[in-house]
Image 1 (spheres, helix red, strand yellow):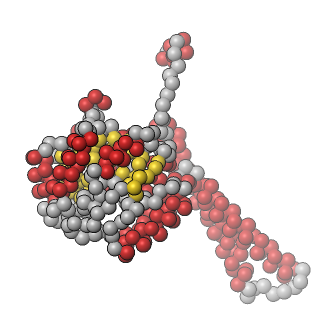
Image 2 (tube, helix red, strand yellow):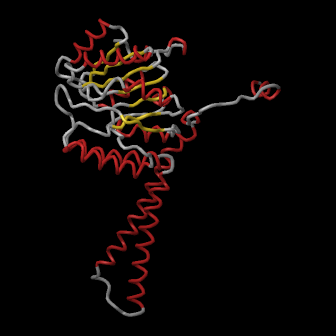
Image 3 (spheres, helix red, strand yellow):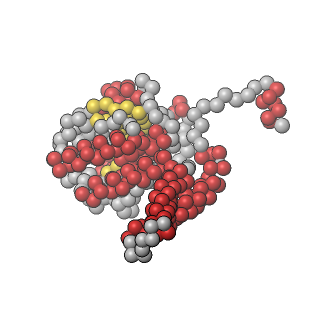
Length: 336
Protein backbone atom coordinates (compact mmCIF):
# COMPACT_ATOMS: atom_id res chain seq x y z
CA UNK A 1 0.00 0.00 0.00
CA UNK A 2 1.07 3.58 -0.62
CA UNK A 3 2.40 5.88 2.02
CA UNK A 4 -0.23 8.40 3.19
CA UNK A 5 1.95 11.32 2.15
CA UNK A 6 2.04 10.06 -1.44
CA UNK A 7 -1.66 10.70 -2.05
CA UNK A 8 -2.54 13.66 -4.25
CA UNK A 9 -6.03 14.81 -5.11
CA UNK A 10 -6.90 14.23 -8.78
CA UNK A 11 -8.58 16.93 -10.87
CA UNK A 12 -12.36 17.13 -10.45
CA UNK A 13 -12.90 15.54 -13.89
CA UNK A 14 -11.06 12.42 -12.73
CA UNK A 15 -12.76 12.06 -9.37
CA UNK A 16 -15.16 9.17 -8.85
CA UNK A 17 -18.69 10.17 -7.96
CA UNK A 18 -18.43 8.62 -4.51
CA UNK A 19 -15.76 7.21 -2.21
CA UNK A 20 -17.10 4.55 0.14
CA UNK A 21 -15.29 4.03 3.44
CA UNK A 22 -15.71 0.63 5.11
CA UNK A 23 -14.18 0.16 8.60
CA UNK A 24 -13.76 -3.55 9.25
CA UNK A 25 -12.72 -5.53 12.31
CA UNK A 26 -12.88 -9.33 12.04
CA UNK A 27 -15.38 -9.21 9.16
CA UNK A 28 -13.71 -11.57 6.65
CA UNK A 29 -16.93 -13.44 5.86
CA UNK A 30 -19.04 -10.36 5.15
CA UNK A 31 -16.65 -8.30 2.98
CA UNK A 32 -17.13 -10.19 -0.35
CA UNK A 33 -20.90 -9.92 -0.07
CA UNK A 34 -20.64 -6.23 0.89
CA UNK A 35 -18.36 -5.49 -2.06
CA UNK A 36 -20.82 -7.18 -4.44
CA UNK A 37 -23.67 -5.14 -2.97
CA UNK A 38 -21.79 -1.85 -3.29
CA UNK A 39 -20.75 -2.63 -6.87
CA UNK A 40 -24.29 -3.60 -7.86
CA UNK A 41 -25.90 -0.56 -6.23
CA UNK A 42 -23.47 1.97 -7.72
CA UNK A 43 -23.44 0.50 -11.22
CA UNK A 44 -27.23 0.31 -11.26
CA UNK A 45 -27.39 4.00 -10.29
CA UNK A 46 -24.73 4.96 -12.85
CA UNK A 47 -22.25 6.08 -10.18
CA UNK A 48 -18.49 5.79 -10.54
CA UNK A 49 -16.99 4.76 -7.21
CA UNK A 50 -13.99 3.71 -5.18
CA UNK A 51 -14.08 1.65 -1.99
CA UNK A 52 -11.61 1.97 0.87
CA UNK A 53 -11.72 -1.01 3.23
CA UNK A 54 -9.87 -0.22 6.44
CA UNK A 55 -8.79 -3.35 8.32
CA UNK A 56 -8.68 -2.22 11.94
CA UNK A 57 -6.15 -4.78 13.18
CA UNK A 58 -8.33 -7.85 12.53
CA UNK A 59 -7.23 -11.28 13.78
CA UNK A 60 -9.11 -13.31 11.19
CA UNK A 61 -8.78 -13.34 7.40
CA UNK A 62 -10.12 -9.82 6.84
CA UNK A 63 -6.95 -8.51 5.18
CA UNK A 64 -6.67 -11.53 2.89
CA UNK A 65 -10.30 -10.91 1.86
CA UNK A 66 -9.50 -7.26 1.08
CA UNK A 67 -6.51 -8.29 -1.05
CA UNK A 68 -8.62 -10.78 -3.03
CA UNK A 69 -11.30 -8.14 -3.62
CA UNK A 70 -8.67 -5.68 -4.85
CA UNK A 71 -7.28 -8.28 -7.26
CA UNK A 72 -10.78 -8.86 -8.64
CA UNK A 73 -11.69 -5.16 -8.86
CA UNK A 74 -9.05 -2.38 -8.61
CA UNK A 75 -11.76 0.05 -7.53
CA UNK A 76 -11.56 -1.69 -4.16
CA UNK A 77 -8.56 -0.48 -2.17
CA UNK A 78 -7.50 -1.33 1.36
CA UNK A 79 -5.36 -0.40 4.32
CA UNK A 80 -4.42 -2.52 7.33
CA UNK A 81 -3.61 -1.24 10.81
CA UNK A 82 -0.99 -3.14 12.81
CA UNK A 83 -3.36 -3.22 15.77
CA UNK A 84 -6.92 -2.31 16.64
CA UNK A 85 -7.19 1.49 16.89
CA UNK A 86 -10.97 1.79 16.75
CA UNK A 87 -13.61 2.89 14.29
CA UNK A 88 -12.76 6.60 14.53
CA UNK A 89 -9.18 5.97 13.45
CA UNK A 90 -10.36 3.82 10.54
CA UNK A 91 -12.78 6.51 9.37
CA UNK A 92 -10.14 9.21 9.77
CA UNK A 93 -7.63 7.54 7.45
CA UNK A 94 -10.44 6.67 5.06
CA UNK A 95 -11.55 10.31 4.92
CA UNK A 96 -7.94 11.31 4.29
CA UNK A 97 -7.76 9.06 1.23
CA UNK A 98 -11.26 9.68 -0.13
CA UNK A 99 -11.10 11.25 -3.58
CA UNK A 100 -14.76 11.14 -4.64
CA UNK A 101 -16.99 14.16 -5.05
CA UNK A 102 -19.10 12.62 -2.31
CA UNK A 103 -18.11 10.31 0.54
CA UNK A 104 -20.18 7.51 2.04
CA UNK A 105 -19.53 5.38 5.11
CA UNK A 106 -21.00 1.95 5.73
CA UNK A 107 -20.28 -0.72 8.34
CA UNK A 108 -18.85 -4.03 7.19
CA UNK A 109 -21.31 -6.26 9.07
CA UNK A 110 -23.99 -6.26 6.31
CA UNK A 111 -26.61 -4.82 8.66
CA UNK A 112 -26.68 -1.67 6.50
CA UNK A 113 -27.88 -2.08 2.92
CA UNK A 114 -25.52 -0.73 0.19
CA UNK A 115 -28.56 -0.07 -2.01
CA UNK A 116 -29.39 2.84 0.30
CA UNK A 117 -26.27 4.76 -0.77
CA UNK A 118 -27.70 6.11 -4.08
CA UNK A 119 -30.91 7.14 -2.28
CA UNK A 120 -28.95 9.02 0.37
CA UNK A 121 -26.89 10.72 -2.36
CA UNK A 122 -30.10 11.86 -4.07
CA UNK A 123 -31.14 13.50 -0.80
CA UNK A 124 -27.69 15.03 -0.37
CA UNK A 125 -27.97 16.68 -3.77
CA UNK A 126 -31.05 18.54 -2.57
CA UNK A 127 -28.65 20.93 -0.88
CA UNK A 128 -27.52 19.15 2.29
CA UNK A 129 -23.98 18.81 3.60
CA UNK A 130 -24.57 15.49 5.37
CA UNK A 131 -27.32 12.89 5.28
CA UNK A 132 -27.42 10.34 8.08
CA UNK A 133 -29.24 7.04 7.95
CA UNK A 134 -31.97 6.33 10.49
CA UNK A 135 -32.46 2.67 11.41
CA UNK A 136 -36.03 3.16 12.55
CA UNK A 137 -36.75 -0.56 12.57
CA UNK A 138 -33.58 -1.95 14.12
CA UNK A 139 -32.85 -5.67 13.94
CA UNK A 140 -30.80 -5.74 17.14
CA UNK A 141 -31.46 -7.16 20.61
CA UNK A 142 -33.08 -4.95 23.26
CA UNK A 143 -29.79 -4.85 25.17
CA UNK A 144 -28.45 -2.77 22.30
CA UNK A 145 -31.49 -0.81 21.10
CA UNK A 146 -32.73 0.56 24.46
CA UNK A 147 -29.37 2.10 25.52
CA UNK A 148 -28.93 3.40 21.98
CA UNK A 149 -32.29 5.18 21.99
CA UNK A 150 -31.57 6.80 25.34
CA UNK A 151 -28.10 7.81 24.16
CA UNK A 152 -29.53 9.34 20.96
CA UNK A 153 -32.15 11.28 22.94
CA UNK A 154 -29.49 12.77 25.23
CA UNK A 155 -27.27 13.64 22.25
CA UNK A 156 -30.19 15.23 20.40
CA UNK A 157 -31.04 17.28 23.50
CA UNK A 158 -27.51 18.66 23.96
CA UNK A 159 -26.60 19.09 20.29
CA UNK A 160 -29.79 20.62 18.95
CA UNK A 161 -29.57 18.41 15.83
CA UNK A 162 -32.90 16.72 14.96
CA UNK A 163 -31.38 13.27 14.35
CA UNK A 164 -32.69 9.99 15.77
CA UNK A 165 -29.66 7.80 15.06
CA UNK A 166 -26.35 9.61 15.50
CA UNK A 167 -24.34 6.40 15.50
CA UNK A 168 -25.74 4.95 12.27
CA UNK A 169 -22.76 3.78 10.22
CA UNK A 170 -24.52 4.60 6.94
CA UNK A 171 -23.96 8.27 6.10
CA UNK A 172 -23.11 10.34 3.03
CA UNK A 173 -21.20 13.61 2.98
CA UNK A 174 -19.99 16.26 0.65
CA UNK A 175 -16.26 15.81 0.22
CA UNK A 176 -15.36 19.10 1.91
CA UNK A 177 -17.16 18.00 5.08
CA UNK A 178 -14.95 14.97 5.73
CA UNK A 179 -11.84 16.99 4.90
CA UNK A 180 -12.80 19.50 7.61
CA UNK A 181 -13.77 17.32 10.57
CA UNK A 182 -11.20 15.71 12.86
CA UNK A 183 -12.28 12.28 14.12
CA UNK A 184 -10.38 10.47 16.88
CA UNK A 185 -11.01 8.40 20.00
CA UNK A 186 -14.68 7.42 19.81
CA UNK A 187 -15.92 10.66 18.24
CA UNK A 188 -17.25 8.94 15.11
CA UNK A 189 -20.61 8.88 16.90
CA UNK A 190 -20.70 12.66 16.76
CA UNK A 191 -19.62 13.42 13.19
CA UNK A 192 -22.87 15.33 12.50
CA UNK A 193 -22.19 17.52 15.55
CA UNK A 194 -18.54 18.02 14.56
CA UNK A 195 -19.65 18.95 11.04
CA UNK A 196 -22.13 21.48 12.44
CA UNK A 197 -19.32 23.00 14.50
CA UNK A 198 -17.28 23.48 11.32
CA UNK A 199 -20.18 25.32 9.71
CA UNK A 200 -21.79 22.45 7.78
CA UNK A 201 -25.16 22.74 9.45
CA UNK A 202 -27.36 21.50 6.59
CA UNK A 203 -27.81 18.08 8.17
CA UNK A 204 -30.75 15.74 7.75
CA UNK A 205 -31.62 12.06 8.10
CA UNK A 206 -33.38 9.44 6.03
CA UNK A 207 -34.88 6.12 7.02
CA UNK A 208 -32.82 3.16 5.86
CA UNK A 209 -33.27 -0.59 5.94
CA UNK A 210 -31.55 -2.53 8.69
CA UNK A 211 -30.80 -6.25 8.63
CA UNK A 212 -29.93 -8.77 11.36
CA UNK A 213 -26.22 -9.53 11.69
CA UNK A 214 -25.37 -12.34 9.30
CA UNK A 215 -21.78 -13.18 10.29
CA UNK A 216 -19.62 -12.68 13.38
CA UNK A 217 -20.60 -11.04 16.65
CA UNK A 218 -21.44 -7.49 17.67
CA UNK A 219 -18.67 -5.23 19.00
CA UNK A 220 -21.13 -3.33 21.22
CA UNK A 221 -20.62 -3.55 24.98
CA UNK A 222 -21.39 -1.71 28.21
CA UNK A 223 -18.00 0.01 28.17
CA UNK A 224 -18.78 1.58 24.78
CA UNK A 225 -22.05 2.96 26.17
CA UNK A 226 -20.20 4.62 29.05
CA UNK A 227 -17.46 5.88 26.74
CA UNK A 228 -20.15 7.36 24.51
CA UNK A 229 -21.40 9.66 27.26
CA UNK A 230 -17.87 10.71 28.18
CA UNK A 231 -17.22 11.54 24.53
CA UNK A 232 -20.50 13.48 24.39
CA UNK A 233 -19.27 15.70 27.23
CA UNK A 234 -16.00 16.17 25.32
CA UNK A 235 -17.74 17.10 22.07
CA UNK A 236 -20.20 19.49 23.73
CA UNK A 237 -17.33 21.23 25.50
CA UNK A 238 -15.16 21.41 22.37
CA UNK A 239 -17.94 22.68 20.12
CA UNK A 240 -19.12 25.34 22.56
CA UNK A 241 -16.04 26.44 24.46
CA UNK A 242 -12.94 25.34 22.51
CA UNK A 243 -12.24 28.94 21.45
CA UNK A 244 -13.56 30.60 24.61
CA UNK A 245 -12.53 28.50 27.63
CA UNK A 246 -12.84 31.49 29.97
CA UNK A 247 -16.59 31.58 29.30
CA UNK A 248 -16.94 28.07 30.69
CA UNK A 249 -14.43 28.08 33.53
CA UNK A 250 -15.10 31.72 34.35
CA UNK A 251 -18.84 31.07 34.68
CA UNK A 252 -18.21 28.16 37.06
CA UNK A 253 -15.69 30.25 38.97
CA UNK A 254 -18.03 33.22 39.27
CA UNK A 255 -20.91 31.14 40.62
CA UNK A 256 -18.68 29.31 43.12
CA UNK A 257 -16.89 32.48 44.25
CA UNK A 258 -20.14 34.45 44.75
CA UNK A 259 -21.70 31.59 46.72
CA UNK A 260 -18.60 31.17 48.88
CA UNK A 261 -18.28 34.90 49.48
CA UNK A 262 -21.97 35.13 50.38
CA UNK A 263 -21.71 32.24 52.86
CA UNK A 264 -18.64 33.69 54.57
CA UNK A 265 -20.15 37.19 54.64
CA UNK A 266 -23.20 35.85 56.44
CA UNK A 267 -21.03 33.92 58.92
CA UNK A 268 -18.96 37.05 59.58
CA UNK A 269 -22.12 39.05 60.31
CA UNK A 270 -23.39 36.20 62.48
CA UNK A 271 -20.23 36.33 64.58
CA UNK A 272 -19.64 40.08 64.77
CA UNK A 273 -23.25 41.23 65.11
CA UNK A 274 -24.92 38.36 66.89
CA UNK A 275 -21.88 37.02 68.74
CA UNK A 276 -22.34 33.40 67.66
CA UNK A 277 -19.36 31.04 67.58
CA UNK A 278 -18.68 29.87 63.99
CA UNK A 279 -15.39 27.95 64.32
CA UNK A 280 -17.05 24.53 64.36
CA UNK A 281 -19.65 25.20 61.67
CA UNK A 282 -19.29 23.14 58.44
CA UNK A 283 -20.70 26.09 56.50
CA UNK A 284 -17.47 28.00 57.14
CA UNK A 285 -15.40 25.29 55.47
CA UNK A 286 -17.87 25.09 52.55
CA UNK A 287 -17.59 28.85 51.97
CA UNK A 288 -13.79 28.73 51.95
CA UNK A 289 -13.76 25.75 49.58
CA UNK A 290 -16.14 27.52 47.17
CA UNK A 291 -13.94 30.63 47.14
CA UNK A 292 -10.84 28.52 46.44
CA UNK A 293 -12.66 26.55 43.74
CA UNK A 294 -13.83 29.76 42.11
CA UNK A 295 -10.32 31.17 42.06
CA UNK A 296 -8.99 27.93 40.59
CA UNK A 297 -11.60 28.00 37.82
CA UNK A 298 -10.64 31.58 36.94
CA UNK A 299 -6.98 30.52 36.74
CA UNK A 300 -7.84 27.52 34.55
CA UNK A 301 -9.84 29.74 32.20
CA UNK A 302 -6.96 32.22 31.88
CA UNK A 303 -4.50 29.39 31.16
CA UNK A 304 -6.87 28.08 28.49
CA UNK A 305 -7.06 31.50 26.85
CA UNK A 306 -3.26 31.75 26.84
CA UNK A 307 -2.93 28.28 25.27
CA UNK A 308 -5.38 28.89 22.42
CA UNK A 309 -4.26 32.45 21.62
CA UNK A 310 -1.51 31.43 19.11
CA UNK A 311 -3.97 29.11 17.36
CA UNK A 312 -6.61 31.83 17.09
CA UNK A 313 -4.07 34.23 15.57
CA UNK A 314 -3.49 31.74 12.73
CA UNK A 315 -6.20 32.55 10.18
CA UNK A 316 -5.71 29.17 8.44
CA UNK A 317 -7.72 27.58 11.26
CA UNK A 318 -10.89 29.23 9.94
CA UNK A 319 -13.02 27.41 7.35
CA UNK A 320 -13.62 29.71 4.35
CA UNK A 321 -16.68 28.73 2.31
CA UNK A 322 -16.36 31.14 -0.63
CA UNK A 323 -14.55 34.34 -1.59
CA UNK A 324 -15.16 37.16 -4.03
CA UNK A 325 -11.77 38.62 -4.86
CA UNK A 326 -11.28 42.34 -5.60
CA UNK A 327 -10.73 43.29 -9.24
CA UNK A 328 -9.36 46.20 -11.18
CA UNK A 329 -7.13 48.81 -9.56
CA UNK A 330 -7.77 47.50 -6.04
CA UNK A 331 -6.54 44.01 -7.03
CA UNK A 332 -3.40 45.49 -8.59
CA UNK A 333 -2.73 47.52 -5.46
CA UNK A 334 -3.03 44.40 -3.27
CA UNK A 335 -0.50 42.54 -5.41
CA UNK A 336 2.17 45.23 -5.01
